[in-house]
Image 1 (tube, rainbow over the protein chains, first blue to last red):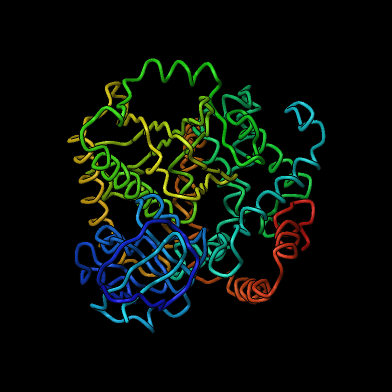
Image 2 (image 1 turned 90 degrees about the vertical axis):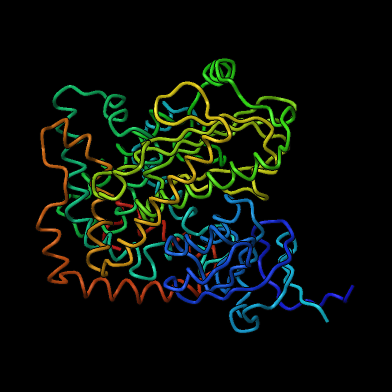
Length: 111
Length: 377
């Protein structure tokens, strides 16, 4: 097993740990690109992101905190969420495999 | 403080209301991106921009309707029941921040804010949810409801996590659906209440999603139900509620779910697991149709929906008085003519300044803005 490295830190907004592939969605018009069980990475969420949220196994956002939209929604759906990473949409890339630790607010990659 | 004591001093009630709104707006984890200021329909427009247009029309209508019903002999309790639920009534306090744009006098503004709290108080043990609980049911009602409801015990079913996953998904899509319909005032479409202490570290939380087919969103007519009620008994869970019905839990509530019951509309028998999936599918299908419509709305069209969601709250009062409940044309004309453009610009500039304030300063400033006693802010 490869060693994990911390790629990003943010607010631990909804606990749980998920490993999966990143899908960066900058605009709600592109939510149909999201595949089942991918990890939604986005600046923020709102209801226009519903199709992507329904397929996501976890959510990572650039903005927000414990009470932002993505955090509330992730807790309602019971999926991990890390908010306020500031640069997830810049540092992560599509298809990248990461681990989302919603308990600690950490995003891991593999060395 | 006992309710009777609270309502002895109108000014104190209004001050407390303004402070409660400010604390709720400040959120809990920092100002930028976490306050109620930037919620949907942001980034299309900030809720406050819509409220700047709305207030001069909406608040006088609300005040006049309440006063006219009182003149007809309606009690506070009867008016409150027409408005259905406390968190829905709480949403009508957002426009108070622009009360200086109305033709209401300072005394009338204070009276309106006071009456709103009184109406909420008809349902809630504490109208402000100061202890972060939203207690609506008496102990007796809690006991009766649990004893009469055929709750599904997750400790006695095969694959309890499968059940939890289905319930979480229904919960999540119902919440998003409410937000899609009612935008920033999504509390107009749900009443989450509790936690009711059942002993042995167990709590009951009730989630009611209602008016899921409001007439200002025609696409919702395809939804085969109008209300979902979810009763959940949780063990070792922590959940809080604020004045506007925003809930917070340190972990997803679904993890701690022990027993549950879900019903739709007035059906008495709880749904089975396949029926829960059907309800979820129905919400997802109608949500997707709604999204197509919403994405095609421009800013002004979406703002008209925002106005309609506010007027929908007072629809039962208007109909009781045999008055048209839809927003007046004058409001739409104000929007088309961008009548409030200068004020919107000034408020946005103020918002920028708020981002650099400490939480205490933020709460103090917002408390002043929302207090009708300080209408010349």
